[in-house]
Image (cartoon, rainbow, N blue to C red; front, side, top):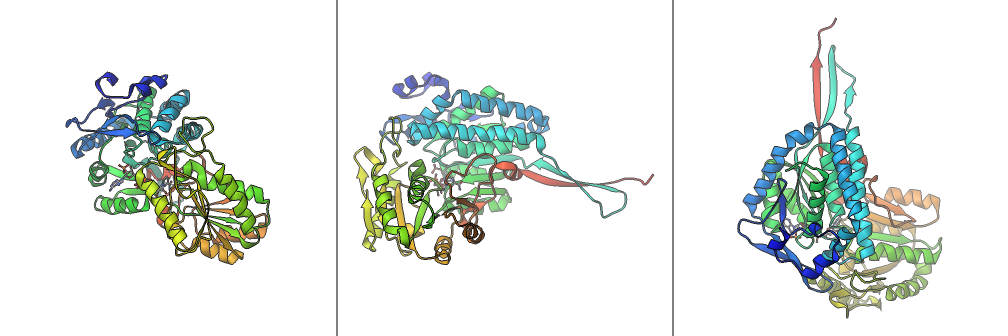
Length: 497
Ligand code: NAP
């Protein structure tokens, strides 16, 4: 099958398992091209080289994937939970066994440093392992009856066919965090991955196939977003849409799903505040601000977009932060030691450029970077701007790039006010050693997640998600599977003996 399509030879040579790089959609257990033979090409953001092509399925072909998922549902949901768990577990094991190839595919199409890509594969697989276990614990409840001679139960049943629409910044984990929970609950799934990163999704399909997921239970459709996602939102057989991406597109999908009244899980944009008090070690604070801002080269919904530093340590913080930012290693994610890869597309570079220009025009100081990087047209120098004010674009909009913006604050009350002054509410970072302040501020911060004296907080057992315009619902942990189950109340009358 691979021979039938154009695929850059150099790429195939680097994989130990060439069949993981699939240039076809995966529907009903079959690899398929579009009937129109139209394809879209996928390129390496670090070099601009074309990696290969994937089919542009149309709405009817997407509808056929939904129909396949609908047909597969009955048998899949009827399996004993431990049988679903066994297949999910095999999928997880297959991912870990193939992690180096999967990470290579990810770095090639997404650009993130190879070490980060390896980390994402482990992270992505961990959701499958977790939900394989959760499948066995999908218990309901017995209700204490308020009527005589009745047995009342609340059962959890799979919601049905689930469509997963995912972004390019975490090409594997944003799929498994949704799909593993849905599959464990007994749902079938149609995934529409981001246009930039379909190969990571298709490699997951290849491994799902090898793990024994029955035909139609897990499908990956590629092609134009409006066409495919339009069909997924319109199609009444799709009972839930689980989306990760921007608030703008998420809001659109909510509206498009309204006529068919679907279950919605929305992991949307972030605009994280990072608040640093002067009561801790300054170097620790600098390292934390570095990690919080520059993870995933700044293309991360959890990236610290507004860094608030207490005025007492403001200038010393800026001096040390600028030095650390200047020292970050920028380059092709496949090269050793690279910490910051390319941005995903020209729009992202333009947004960084525009936000920096706007900030400087409104009085910010440029302390590092502030321009493109010689590594290539999609690279942007890690940048530090100081003296951010609320009227600047960067104080209001998610950057999604390696630009750190810092402002001073004077007291706890002001820090909370600045942090909450946004329509977003995904994550807030708080650095302080004062226990009372931690209690007060974790209460007051209007966010779905608060990281206190740490940056890395995500993982399979925790409820990931935001409030306000950062989303609806939670992914991960015992909560994540709730998004894909319906409660069925059964009231059974019996004759008194
Ligand atoms: P995006 O532009 O909203 O795209 C997300 C997905 O929606 C992609 O598959 C995209 O397809 C598709 N899409 C785009 N336009 C569409 C339309 N008109 N109708 C239907 N589908 C459409 O977001 P992104 O740029 O990929 O990702 C960055 C955003 O995701 C950021 O805002 C970030 O904060 C957010 N994010 C949130 C989380 C979280 O867990 N809360 C995690 C990661 C990222 P194409 O690829 O073809 O455009």
